[in-house]
Amino acid sequence: MVLMVKNAFISLYSNKSFIDSYHTFILEYIRKTGNIITIVKSSNDEIKEYVVTDKDNIIITAKPQFATENNDDLKLNILGSQYFIN
Image 1 (cartoon, one colour):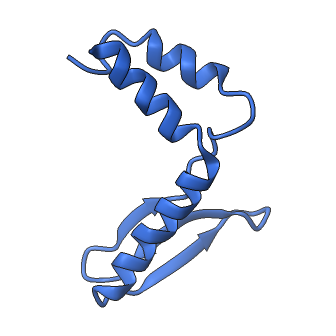
Image 2 (tube, rainbow, N blue to C red):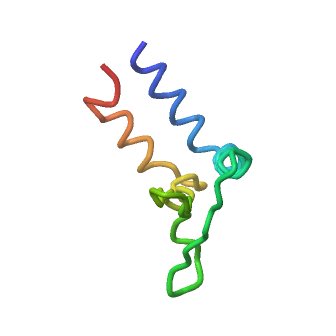
């Protein structure tokens, strides 16, 4: 069962289109609830993080970049993780 969950996680999070659409969905949900999102860019003009500018200034990190053609690191880290799921 543990191996099935790990493989499902790997399959899901190595799919770039899923990550792109889910990230967009989350940001749109935050906007639709009446919050304003400010985009913070790094020195090379890449998006560093998003800040939900309400009374708490919640920081949302930029979209993860581990969904690539070569997912060996992701697979090794997840499959080798003793504490991923108990």
